[in-house]
Image: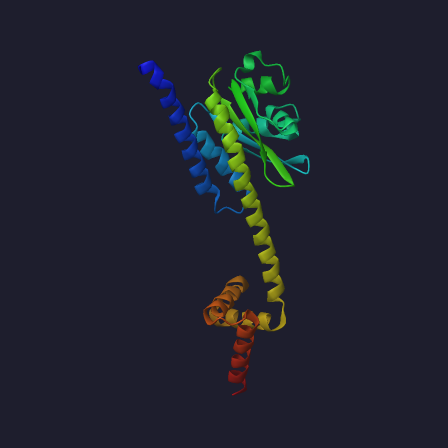
Length: 246
């Protein structure tokens, strides 16, 4: 009876562990706007949350060229960096669009240049899973074990779910980054626009604050009064002008 119930218990524990990992990843990345910062959080959380995984790395490509790398241990960063060449499990996963598994690098022949470097760093097993981020960036999440035969079917399932979830989170980070850049461009345009620029100058003089903060003051007033930003700016400039005239 005990033997019959043991496997479902282990299986359910694996599901709970994976669910906890995905929740923690979401909490860590949901507010980020910097892609490299998001990659660093991704590999650190994964390393700490997945039993049997000693290190974690991420390999990113933009338009087919190396676009970023992250490693939970800087000693292993070169294993994920495609500037060292395409001979790696990560590149195999990206090119083939499928999960790559090597449970024991001692008997591995697929990556003749990469494998000796990995073994010298203490890596004995690896799973690389492709990650689709958006139409410009793709990558691979790389899970490393310090001993042979430590990576199980449960790790493969975790890697598959992790790759899909990470792709969604990283796509959101890139989208927030683009939106932030666009907002910055719009702000720069507003600061040089007639009456809004004048109003910002008035607020900066009155409060001794930088342009971005002065523009935020205008936006807050616009929202509170339910009046268009340019109208708030015009009213402020007219008021200051009247005071000067008197």
